[in-house]
Length: 288
Image 1 (cartoon, rainbow, N blue to C red):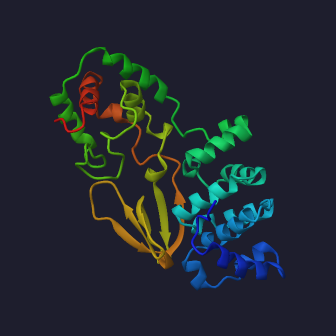
Image 2: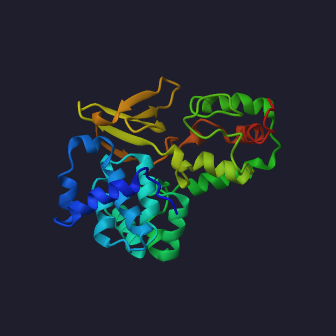
Image 3: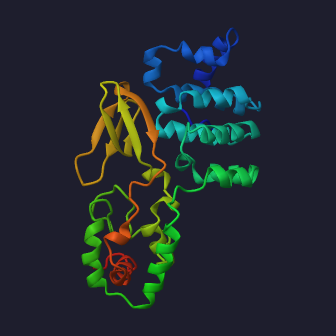
């Protein structure tokens, strides 16, 4: 399988020379600031990819090293590192440990890696990767699902959807802070009610909310809508201008455990209006 990081073999060779003489963690501590600009994760994943391509097992120490710079690693590189770590039992254990210690949020773990964690240790995965839903969400979901016995009005639902337009598009019209609700793979009433009233039950990786601390002591928040070798672009709710942030300005970035969509939609949408909202969301794409 080809390496997920460009120039993997060349980077691996350069790092391998250093590793002959000094422990892995100390090696990374001595990497210059210019190399850090490309993100420490590029080098770490390059090392691991080189070893995996050579048919060697990934040691626990190497897996742990990938996580020591987690808060300074970009989302795309985090995903590549997790996919690489998930290839071995020691890597899976390191992911479990990182979640338990609060180094990473469960929402950062891609579905394919999550599946491997569950297969590795279902009990531990259930304890550590459970969604951050409030205990009362289940009751609200039941109440609102019961209200769906009435057939809703698409026109009335369009008016209710106005409360959602600051973050959600429908059929390509609107902002992309949250998922385009016309393109959801599952638009059943049961799924939609749970997604609206219990937004923390499932958060798609592309809509993880990041808290970014800058070296000038400012803090930003948003989802990462674009990423290059030198910048990330953050989009925040409300339809404002997306902000481009240079990597050398970033001190740390952390993924929130919670969805950008807050709990409490039952306070904005009456039970009686919910059938209308669901009818609007279930209309054929290209409808009203």
